[in-house]
Image (cartoon, rainbow, N blue to C red; front, side, top):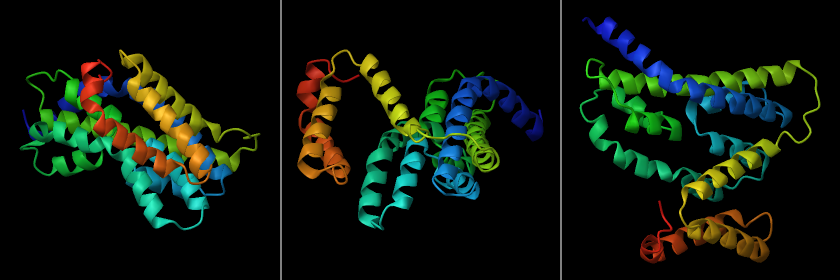
Length: 236
């Protein structure tokens, strides 16, 4: 089989795995694009941010960062905290990405939760090139997100409708992520630590400055209490 045939075969094998991601990414992408437009940004912003950042939760949060006073240190810390999980994703994929050639650079850049989940767990047929399979999974998922957010930005500028409360989609997304993690945990020590730290820092630092202290507290508490929590079955 020639190189073009291998690429096509890998695409056919990868596409079905990404269909559920398509539905979720398009809905959230549309909401994100509209949210950006409502916040005063043209469709170029969600399109370019989706292409370069490609981090859903971070992109939603970036809207408020762009509208807030210039705070580079806080922005850097928040970004690292939100996306820190990708450090562990990357470590897990070191062996799988070995020998991928130029494709591994895009695979590293384009890794998101969903692409990692598919590429790490999918049973790739023996006659399908693994590198191209993972490449297509990553590219398709990013295409879904970029196209959805761009379309949302365009529709937001063309269609006049009441968008009051649309910015709550970010809060709703984080609530869903929290609930999914809550259901996965056998015991809820980590979730309770997160809620407790958030409440304490909210009371101590105020609504405008509690996020970074909260993340630092959570990181310290989980690091120091990791072994007891693991023994108690509180980590999955």
